[in-house]
Image (cartoon, rainbow, N blue to C red; front, side):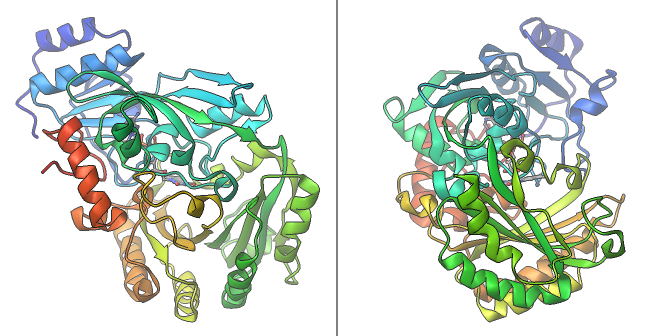
Length: 465
Ligand SMILES: Cc1cc2nc3c(=O)[nH]c(=O)nc-3n(C[C@H](O)[C@H](O)[C@H](O)COP(=O)(O)OP(=O)(O)OC[C@H]3O[C@@H](n4cnc5c(N)ncnc54)[C@H](O)[C@@H]3O)c2cc1C
């Protein structure tokens, strides 16, 4: 869909008059801030940004986009790596003003509106000692994260974020406001749990909560980067026996000039082992002990800490405006080829802020049946993510090339599938690979039903048939 010419002032005025929220146009003082998203690699100039206050605003905005033939981008936390939450010349349906959070502690659920971030969500639920699986960076949106699957520190105990979705309010392409749950519109509910933003704009998310914290045993241990192969081989064995409470990450980095790392290590290669235990902190410290016992740690930051601190521990390293690209997949196994390739590309990374991550699946993720939700490929043992990134203007192409060369070499150790929240703009084949042919066909049938004109196509798109 393309813009049909410049929007007239009268047309825009009529649209604005029907909004409870705010309309932002090019030339407005707030325009540049409003059009910017987390990934600084995208610099799009929307024709208009509708800062929605409620579901009726979202419905109004969808109707406007349809009548004017505008591209539609939907924005929750704005962390889309491919930049789907903005667009040139189209309409951004911006949910960031929709910050309502209601916690039902006795029912162990929380309802969050579409503009809530994980930091805001965790802050509200931790007042009751409750949480659900959220992202590693607290500024990520509940919306895009949950719709795309959602992997984080609680996932092996409590499942992916989408596994915790109990119901959602959705505004569809034809302007209906629907509830999706196990009992209402269950087909749509299935699709929302991993199918991304393909089926409508979700204005609120009801999520299951679990007792977590407020103190958890968690944190990273860093070792010298030239030990990466040894550490990853240790990790391969360590991960086999982990309790579900323990979710872990291997992080191959170049040491940032951060106060928690010794100054003489700044700018040098490090391998981090990071864990979070979502149970009794004493049991957690015991479970984490082996990652601290590998000798000569450069920094050991593991300890009891507030869960909300763990959820924002890495925020400073991932500020808004970072230019980033991801090349990701699932491992068949952490075989020797994979370990050697990761260690080599860690050493030859073209940017000091590029990283390679391994996250361990299994546990509650693998106990949910493959067909129970739209999320694809839950049985993989580990997730891989190579993040090419830079805080400098320009130069991202070189780092993207590094990530792509890395992926090409490590591919024999991968399943060929993908996690949609870590996909870049890689085309329909990769989206199909994320779901597999049967699930993709089921998602396409759902798309035919809920968005037959593909109004919502700025996403990991499932085109209607
Ligand atoms: C710094 C950083 C850290 C990350 N960490 C993790 C992590 O720990 N685990 C993980 O699994 N992923 C992680 N991700 C990936 C993240 O899950 C995805 O980028 C996710 O889509 C972001 O959601 P958002 O709401 O912040 O982004 P947005 O850019 O606002 O949304 C992304 C897409 O989701 C859809 N969408 C958003 N809101 C709605 C809505 N209300 N209704 C319908 N569709 C909607 C749209 O298609 C939109 O283009 C991270 C990304 C970044 C940049």
